[in-house]
Length: 375
Ligand code: SF4
Image (cartoon, rainbow, N blue to C red; front, side, top):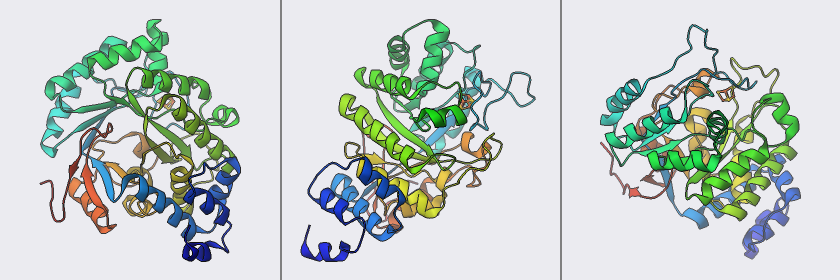
């Protein structure tokens, strides 16, 4: 650390952490708690931004993606969920493959490059149904990245079909699955899982399934659902368990913090995250998750302005256009149902960063040089 920076930071509780960051030392649980509770947002942002710059430079990613939620009929009863329905509910639905194909074809002119498939736990929909969906997507265009199937869904399909999850994942991969989202991780602490998603797979099972996916060559995302009843200690524990898994199997491509939205859920009196708290989670993740490359700030959860600010606090990915997003909108997100790619490019450029069109695998990059647009 230069003398100048040292002088700048000397009054900050983050100074010892800055020393570690600049000398390449791994941060521990105690450091994480300081990061997750500090009021020194200037220093926190500075440190996270330095690490982001070192890892990914000035590039900030986005995608043009469509959400497909094949059904909302769910055998689960997570208290955090506003999306699930029982079969007899008037707005319960199941989409057939033709309907899903039509939705995708309608959205193709937007320049789609990714389909985000997240379903519910519907015992009537078997593995063959989801294989057919993946094949249809790849028939429409082999270039479309299929980002789909949470560990919770994969576990459910395994139990439904009486198959081990490596077989379920192998079959989905052969049908076209490219990479998995991080949903269902919520908060790993058993105390929290009991209160917000009783009956969902355990933290250990979630981590095991992601580890199996990594061994099969699938990259996956990791999430943290924050801003309800969790403590800072539980957030830090969650991040460190993700880091430990990444050390073992190395297949997480991105960390995705998800700010909780309470409408139509069964969570009473949640401690919703405010602006600083949103930024604290993103910055703490950038600093603690030293073995992750990408940190996402999703505008549907944060709002476009907060997501843009997060680019200065360690994030390097604004996610996608999110056409047809339902899950967080059912829980009260009022961020509109879609943001155009031109708006994402503008948000990134106005933050002083270089927009890069990619997909959840980060396999290809279309760098948009100054003034260049997509349309
Ligand atoms: S979060 Fe997923 S598993 Fe839980 S009730 Fe909602 S749809 Fe079902």
